[in-house]
Image 1 (cartoon, rainbow, N blue to C red):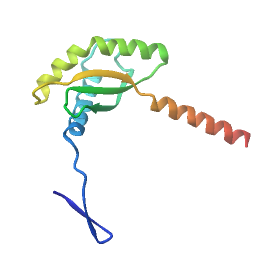
Image 2: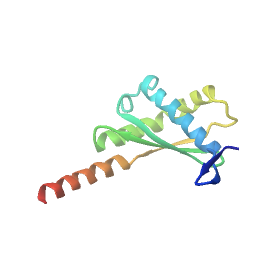
Image 3: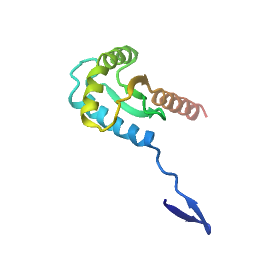
Image 4: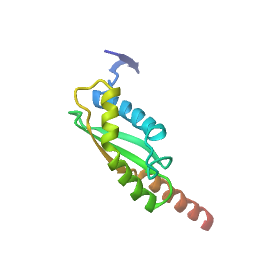
Length: 129
């Protein structure tokens, strides 16, 4: 157990849970597959894995992805990811040591769009003020 001294008191450092470690591993492996192995033109070069959330029982993994190129490309990329899910799971099963590879769910990450919208609003406010 790791401890840290903070203002004279010992505080226990929060250990990363197994689901967080698995999420990091899945994000890295699937990101590499998207870059180098998946040949679907709907997915290739336009999809970035932003984050992964794995359930506590390690049976489900939600991949939050950013798609570059507008709403049409987002829908096409999601369809491409869904069609590549079997390929991705099979390759994950070969690469990582787990009893069961989680079911993969791909979702659009809305944080980048929200950040862009906030930046646009701040810029508008700054120009008016």
